[in-house]
Image (tube, rainbow, N blue to C red; front, side):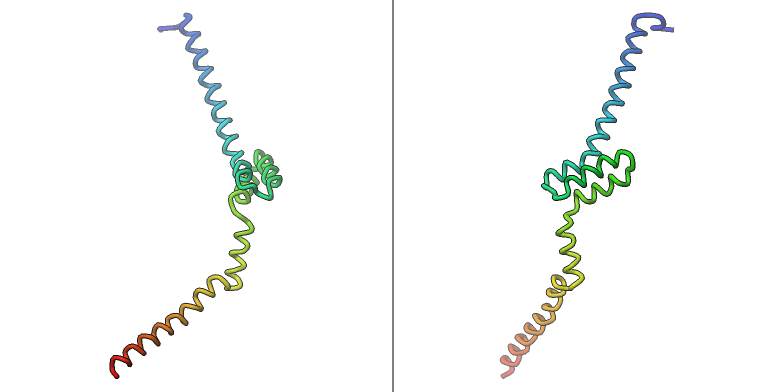
Length: 121
């Protein structure tokens, strides 16, 4: 067997140990960076619930479903979402557009009819 009981055998074992430790360290670092993503997003948006997101992220190391909640809170603008839900519920934003369309169509139809009547006269 080549390299058995030689200095090369020991060097290969040392290199394998270094690669193993490096791979484990890279995996832990990657896991850490992904896990810290909600906190980084909250900092960049200057989120009002930064403390809550930080606590949920730390708890998420144990219970991963809590980390998902931290991601949702960090990435979703709660105030804008609530305003949008309120507008949909009350029908102010979408309803105003949809209610004004039939009125605009009626005005256009009246103008077209007036033009046709003018042509016939």
